[in-house]
Length: 107
Image (cartoon, rainbow, N blue to C red; front, side, top):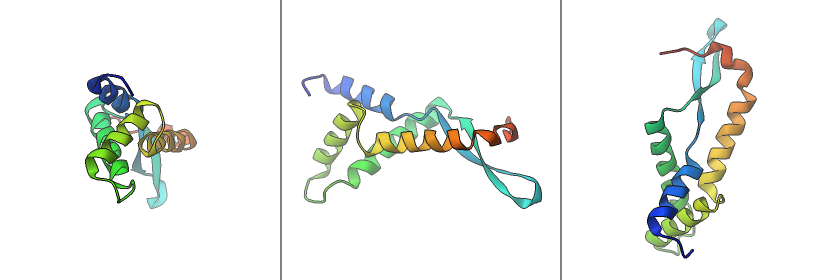
């Protein structure tokens, strides 16, 4: 990409880091509902790194892991790739379940 590798890594992790996540909460009648909750910064960064590595592993088997990881990091830095899609899907699910936000448990 022509950018510093450290910059690409930082931007990639920022683009994949989730702001909210869904947690299961017991509701009346024994039901479990998905409740959107803010993600702690340390957990969010850990999830981002995990998603980038998982997405890299799922790429073409013909390439060595270091090339797959590099390609996923470049894609994530550009706002594309499977890891960024995972974040967007999580945010969409949280938006859909916003009606359950009143069940949020503060711990």
